[in-house]
Amino acid sequence: MSRPLILISNDDGYYAKGINDLVEMVRDFGDILVVAPDGARSGASLSITSREPVRIRKISEKAGVQVYSCTGSPCDCVKIAFEKLIDGRPDLILAGINHGDNAAVNAHYSGTMAVATEGTLKRVPSIGFSSCKLEANADFSAMRPYVRSIVEDVLNTGLPKDVCLNVNFPALEEFKGMKICRMGTGDWVNEWDERIDPRGRSYFWLTGDFVGYDEEDESTDRGAMNSGYVAITPIQLDCTAYSAMEELRQKFGL
Amino acid sequence: MSRPLILISNDDGYYAKGINDLVEMVRDFGDILVVAPDGARSGASLSITSREPVRIRKISEKAGVQVYSCTGSPCDCVKIAFEKLIDGRPDLILAGINHGDNAAVNAHYSGTMAVATEGTLKRVPSIGFSSCKLEANADFSAMRPYVRSIVEDVLNTGLPKDVCLNVNFPALEEFKGMKICRMGTGDWVNEWDERIDPRGRSYFWLTGDFVGYDEEDESTDRGAMNSGYVAITPIQLDCTAYSAMEELRQKFGL
Image (cartoon, rainbow over all chains, first blue to last red; front, side, top):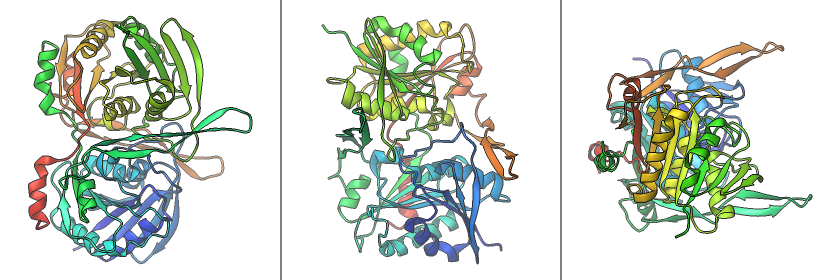
């Protein structure tokens, strides 16, 4: 039996500690192909590059691990790996480890989760891993047994159709276990830091504070993390608000 | 009673015909604030700008219509309008008219729908309008009565909580009516056009053909458009795959 092919990307760049740690955690499960951005793409969401060309560059190749950088978005990395670097299809797509969590509605902005979304669009089992540890040299070693257990399980038995996993780890050295969660709700406030440039014109840095609406609720991803659990949120591609359809038909007289 | 404030953005740029047509279609319903990108941002998804500053510039002001351009993404436009240009909150957020449809899973990549998603995150009723007409000088006039009817209805009675509308129009001069639809499924193939630059190095343009899996099914947005209907797909913020949670709990022994 041939070894599984695991495609790995992220939104922090191919050189980030998180992606290199992830490769080390799972490399004995299969052949690893890393195709990751050539620089930071945090907050890239599922953006695609259409107004400029995309290039790829081989960074390294050692036993069972090939690494390419890509000038495009995290989503572009998956797309170009599929068509230009892989003969056939990958068996699994992983994203991360992201330096910073992607829980609650922030999954929508995430380049890490974009990798998993694009993988799911291509009907490959896909998982995004993120940690609340932001530092460039963060120690992710406590995540290792959880990452390996989840990856091994999904390699063996797949995932429900059109569903990927958003796995978020609190900034702890020990976890209480795993919880299957729903996506928490919330919004950002104080989003802009206004400054004046040397020519007297104002410019704005995006920043802000996240206000979670249900962070005390352990059934949400952020709530579970706040209680010390690894939060596994299953995310589906289909965003149709089925429960609103009848109300809308009546509203519009249809 | 004060006039409603309608915030309008897009991903084709503030100067696009689509957004200017949309403003003309709805301007008698309220005061209009346009904050739109200073250039094309197709495929921007819900990306945010974090590694460079964002600037805004006032383009014009005439009776009841203020127009600003923004160097950021469609999502940034909504965020900066909220915090820096609006006193209070808008009553409605509109996106479009997009030159090109955003039906089926392509809503995930869309900058137009990012405007509606961000508006929904901020709990303002939000609607994205897109047309299958791609041309820069497209004639959108057949859409006018539908756009006005939907906007008037949503201004009067709002939308279900945490749900926005993705409204797609076929490239026709007359429509059979409106249908409330689900998001169609599909994927892209032949996504990269590989070329060789004058220095002999390869580069790739993102392109491709969309393969819809359920385009014959009138209950999907693309299926409804194929039959001549205006497709209204309600989109929810919460992407949790609730139906997969029990299976995953068993899978992971939780």
